[in-house]
Length: 402
View 1 (cartoon, rainbow, N blue to C red):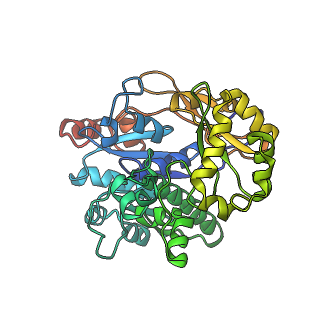
View 2 (view 1 turned 135 degrees about the horizontal axis):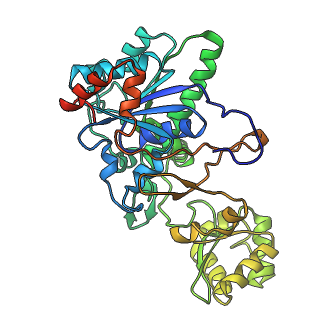
View 3 (view 1 turned 180 degrees about the vertical axis):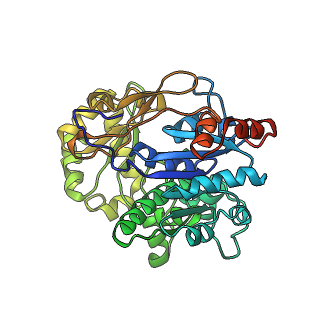
């Protein structure tokens, strides 16, 4: 849907995507394309569809992962082990601009749906292979789920407390791969616009998340030490943590430089001499004396209510935030003020969802189409592919489509 007065078509209008996808990595990538106006045809298994449909029933009876990753798509349910089902996919791909798959390693190649095979047959096609560890190397055949890749990529080693490593609370490896697949498709579409040719795009969850490891990776490779796990604190900046307030809240504070520390010492802690005390005057000194630094800040903020603490910090020009739970995020005043919520149609009725963060010139925003029921568009897509009602009925009778 378009928010505002713009009459421009969405940027990916006219682009057709066929996706043999499951779980999160590929579905989240293609959802970005659907939100920008692409037609996304989601190929699902006849026996239950994308297995993410069965993860939970928290979203009004639907799976929360599926609702998140699959709006704006058309669902066709096919048995790809049957040659007739596979032929339907080949017909769909012949008319597509983009093909995306994240099947287990080797499965797409056995079906002739790997990027190399498809791009050889269709030179304008952009074909995306998303995998756990890449198409080659000793890990190519390993099964890859988000938590496992978080561990292999080192994310878990720098997340948590000194005594307990923890995975991220969101599927970071899946999301990283999805966003690189999304941007890879956009880059390939731009290149096709100038050369007329598509081509293969490969993204692995491991490589995507290793890129996101960013400063901890460079710190370890070039500095010789791995950043410590510090909970909400920062491994190399202090004070940078969550501090309890008098009414039970928790306020996060981030001091980025020594000027900010001097303001904090004077206007919040009430001890301006700490701004020049050699034990605290530099960030290196504060990190070395982290326990004392945090104790001074905790004592000052612990004497204030949450609102008073935020007001004092903001008055001093210091970066601060509240530690919100997920339900509180759903009622965040900033998101409400910027009208960042929409309703998305689903098989169980409308569900609230946040507007995607890309806002284009003219106020154009995401399409945010309906979440499909399994096989909701099978008949229409088969008829569009040239099949008669009798042929479709025969496929249904044989369990090739649903």
